[in-house]
Length: 431
Image 1 (cartoon, rainbow, N blue to C red):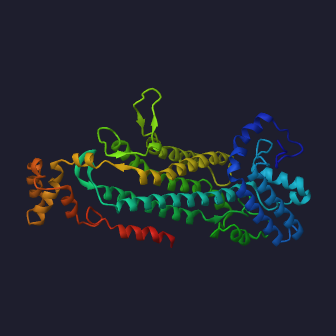
Image 2 (tube, one colour):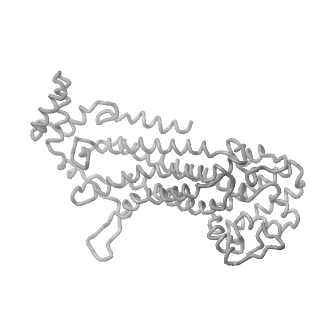
Image 3 (cartoon, helix red, strand yellow):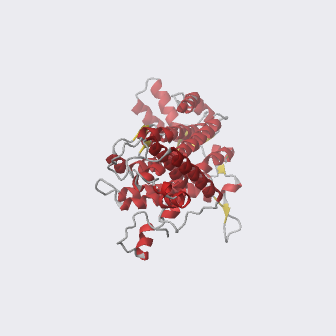
């Protein structure tokens, strides 16, 4: 390992302790490394603006940072256990190539604000991906909701309740994912704050050009207080995981529906073959494994959020405990977004089994229609309710699923899905 940035002449380093301190940090930093380089370039520009590095030094530092980024992408520079972390690797490379100019790059900053800004840039990318996935799911649902509706039993308490439709089912999830996309946008507004220049959480005795780094890195605002920059670590990460988890809650319920609908007992849905797997012992089986793992994916993200929450039982100021938040954050975001990415194609290609769905609609499922019609004709609703309950077995006489849906004129239901309104909401997410 290269010499730690904090090494002092009278301190002996124990290899076992260093291994424990470093943990998986340098490996996890591969995910944030390019963002760390980007922020380092902005920091160099800021140092040049206040005369800490010369224009020539700034140009050389930026050139070497670009070369390092290219080498990292190409695989010719590997971030590994030669370094304590990604921050150390950047400084070591610049010092190797540029000598004293490389040693100046850390002036006015700490590894604390270095990881804060690299993570913040990375989190903005994750939220952009989350919004994109939620929009894609919502669009597929709206497209399929607009197709001719097929009658589908509507369930409460997992018992057959009323006549529903494929249009209503898709419209419900469309609206949910429009809201999930909106939540991604709102979370992005929260975290779009530049912490670079707050150093170890108390500022420095340099007039750092924080306005420049805020603009250069594309942040909406500066995170003003150095103390709050540290207080926000973990809090902002949890907000991103919560936004992803919120979308996965809808995925979990959707996947539960499909898990039931693909059973032989329901037989309402056939999945694309790519979304099923075979059994290792039973030749006849095709298992909905993808759907089941989509259903389980919320747990991974919720666990990541909980781990970070448990780390935050801390006083103000930086504490090393927060190092462990990187692994939780990376794994939670990666798994959650990978799950969401699979959903649009699954929904676009799943096939309904109309005969099985129609066969599952039984006469008693029209009882609510009967009660509402009698109430509309002037019968007190509770009296109409009792009469319909007593005659539930014959409620379907002379009725069809299409007739029930056509009469369902309350906004958002069978004959009035308001898909144009949902499309308008989706399109207006852009501003």
